Amino acid sequence: MSRKAILPLGVLKYLYVGSAKFKEDLAYYRDVLGAQVIWNKHAFGAHVAALRVAEGPQILIADHRPSPGCMPVFCVSDLDETTAELASRGWKPKTGPFEIPDGPCYVFEDPSGNELAVFGNVRPDALLPRGV
Image (cartoon, rainbow, N blue to C red; front, side):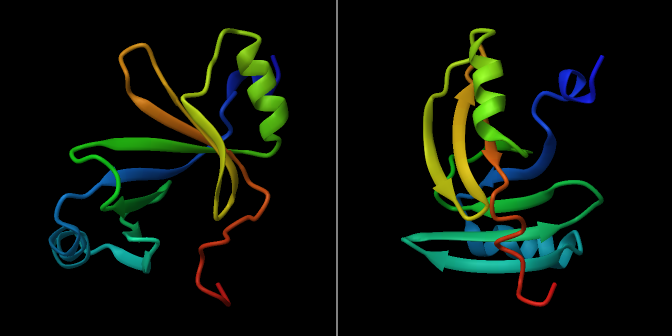
């Protein structure tokens, strides 16, 4: 069995966490949990911050996401190929494709209504601070 068949959604890149109290949440992750703040941005009417609290995916806290809530965001090398393969098995996007800084993205739901996202990594690490 190929690695792609075993890992059809590639790499878990982000945990997109909703924030109803952005400043308080940012302070909690930074000051209480000791998270490294990779970046903190306000654009298009939304506050989003990327945090590193452990090995593995970054946590993105965002005031435009529902809270409480956490959406896993997966990164694939070929979004068209991945979505075609998923669609052949009955997958349907909820929204997309739309652009995120790293590349085109789709949001989809499992049967229970949990949101997940998958994006094509055409601009790798576009949100990292320059020089990293």
